[in-house]
Amino acid sequence: MFNNELEVTLQKATADQMKPKPDQNSLGFGQFFTDHMFTMRWTRRQGWHEAAIEPYRTFAMDPAAMVFHYGQAIFEGMKAYRGKDDQIFLFRPQDNFSRMNQSALRMCMPRFPQERVLQALRAMVYLDQEWVPKTSGATLYIRPTMVATEPALGLRPAEEYLFFIICCPVGAYYSEGFSPTRIYVEDTFARSVPGGVGNAKTAGNYAASLKAQALAHDKGYTQVLWLDAVEHKYVEEVGTSNIFFLIDGEVITPPLEGSILPGITRDSVLQLARDWGYPVSERRITIDEVLAAGRKGTLQESFGTGTAAVISPVGEFCYRDECVQINGGTAGALATRLYEELQAIQFGYREDPHKWRVRVG
Ligand code: COI
Image (cartoon, rainbow, N blue to C red; front, side, top):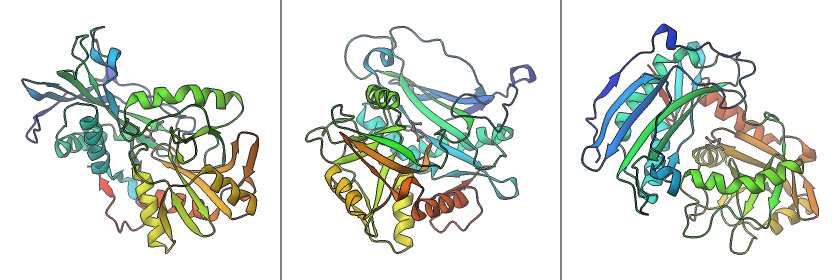
């Protein structure tokens, strides 16, 4: 049921439910959680109901809850930024919620009233505003999630769901920060298949990526670059982000053909590159073309884009027995400009011509 009139109750955390704030200079990623959370429930009979901003708490769930067995779980990643004059902003939150509703459709889960949930999120971030970091580059990461809670073991879409939003102050996602990463090009495992769920932000996609990521970590790489599952030839995305190349002056990123995540940072980067006059292509690109450009010296830059990773320059790709270094293993000018521009918009220090910012409070 799609209910924009959904009533949201507010229960503030008491002084003894409030947690000490972590040191803002060593936040890491996703380790500390704020004082409040948003929750609501869905049943076939009642639709969305029991919406509440309430103190952060644990859940009791039936061991038969369908999410544990058949994996109906979707989520989003978004951020709140403390910027100029202590104002707090969200970045394109409507796009995250639209994408989450697309993921819900794909996973046979109920869609939710986006505007109402966005209102509740703004109220919750306002309530937890002291948790939005004040240190440079640090943000409040926001994790909307929906899971199937109906206790049943027949294989079918569940008829009961829990939607929740939790928030955590974070620093850089990679320990490298903005420094270039080393990426292993995966040629055996696959992340997603044509007709599969690669373009939905569903938990199983991340579980499927863990083995290759662990093997790459063991070999000293930061992340894995996925190739298509059929020919192991076309570049798809990195484990935590979409991927871009700057080859001979052209900005290239794989197209949205169903197997990769339609990133909101990806879309913002495409827009900025177009605004700046770069030729931009969303097209299929093979790993051979990337390596050939690397050998020829025309592979000027490569970088990942994502909410958590922001802009993450790639310093080196290794594929089978060949490694290509990019830009001498240093961050390129385009990645640096994009990183600075995006952050300046997100934190409210620069014009926002595309109306991406949403003020909290
Ligand atoms: C995000 O960038 O928000 C994600 O959800 C990626 C996750 C691996 C942290």
